[in-house]
Amino acid sequence: MAWWDVLLGILAGLLGVYVVLLLGLWVYARRHPETVEMKDALRLLPDLLRVVRRLAADRAVPRGVRIKLALLLVYLVSPLDLVPDFLPVIGYADDVIIVALVLRSLLRSAGPEPLRRHWPGTPAGLRIIERLAGLAPSEPGPAHGG
Image (cartoon, rainbow, N blue to C red):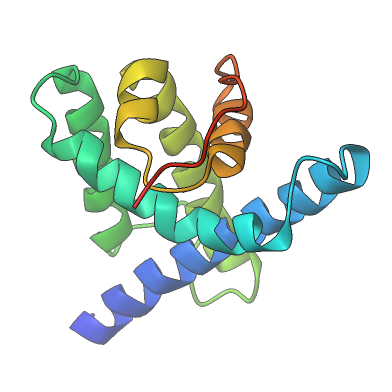
């Protein structure tokens, strides 16, 4: 397996997670049109990647969170998959599902405070991620992030 196959698999997995997040946001926005703007939806994946990187670097975050992240990265670069990637659509579905489940577990394990401390995006984006992770949403407040 060539390095570009691995890179393509990672990018496809991230794209799949992005599509799933956007679909989830679309459903959420239809139910709560006052809470989600499209700019928040488009920023979610980059903000989520930044917060995961920051959580991985934070030594105050439990070691189990960093181990889950490392195992996720090993799975994504591994040539072994539950469903082979050459199968159209469903080939990357296992990657998307595993990434989503691990990220949910990772954010729940880290807890709401580290997530809020490291969140680089908008408060609306943070509330969406908290809801998707099964955490109690933070209260709306002034914009922050970076």
